[in-house]
Amino acid sequence: MDNIAGVKARILGQVADAADESALETLRVAAVGKKGEVSLMMRGLGKMTPEEKQVAGPALNALKNEINSALAARKSALGDAALNERLRSEWLDVTQPARPAQNGTIHPISQVTEEITAIFADLGYGVAEGPQIENDFYNFDALNIPPEHPARQEFDTFYMHRADGDNRPPHVLRTHTSPVQIRHMEKHGVPCRIIAPGRVYRSDYDNTHTPMFHQVEGLAIDTDISMANLKWTLEEFCRAFFEVDFVELKFRASHFPFTEPSAEVDIRCSWKGGQLKIGEGDDWMEILGSGMVHPKVLEAAGVDATQYQGFAFGMGIDRLAMLKYGIPDLRAFFDSDLRWLRHYGFASLDMPNMRGGISG
Ligand code: DAH
Image 1 (tube, helix red, strand yellow):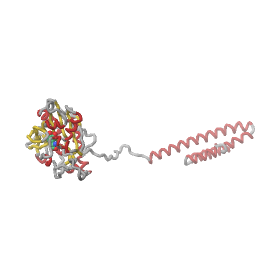
Image 2: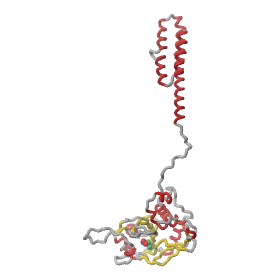
Image 3: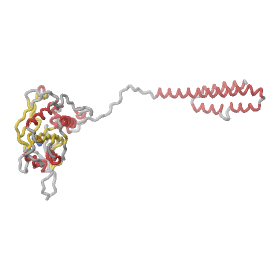
Image 4: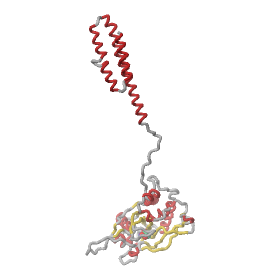
């Protein structure tokens, strides 16, 4: 049985030295495979005497078992080593901060429109919309601005092209959101309480004017709505929008063809140190036009002006955004300058700050 001991020492030595799983498999086939060394030795048992067999049989079985366990042990050791090597080479630091994602920002106009909508939603106002390409009737006539009215010239209107020989009045890019008043009442009737934010267009360009800008129209019609309701609504809006507990508004008599009486509204503010503060100081800044809806406007929209009355107002959204967020130049709003957008833009989860909310 010296032979068995020698074979055992050699094979176990080779198993211990096997460098990887495929070398191990070659060794297994050569040793305990069907035609392997040990299997051939076992076949030799048949030619032995019973006495020899009694000694050699168990010894060969033991040899085979030992080789099998050595193979299994080496295999698992090689597996561990491979895993350890992967763990070492593929190591990554999960405590490192993630790479910042390039998020876009919400444009101040969108943000302020959301804020205005949220405040008026609290007051029970829905949102209405109308087309940006309007016809003469909705943009002017229905709002009590007949063709010869001087207000038509004041508006710096963009007129759309008509084919030669087509003498119908041209369509216009709406010069204000007021036509939405008519469209809404025509379609949904009264009583109503809506705001209509959106783009408007005038042929004008300087520090404080861009040919496209944004307005929000307000309209509240019922049987008993008065100027006092208008005043309360606008004061409440300004308090919530500018996030101040106290605002002072000045209703200055004015004229709009679509309201009677009409008022422009100024808000008390201070410009001390070049910084704008709303609700204090000795300056006044105009923020909107408003008034009691003219009976002719109600009638143009099919509303019985002997039964119904109400107020309307129109504010510049861009102006409100500049005032609230200290943005000095209107034109930059529409330059699409990424640096500006990143600086003045809002994160998507910046909810309108409604400190104080709506009282009453
Ligand atoms: N449409 C006016 C403008 O563009 C603003 C305005 C004034 C709207 C008075 C109104 C209003 O609804 O009642 O200048």
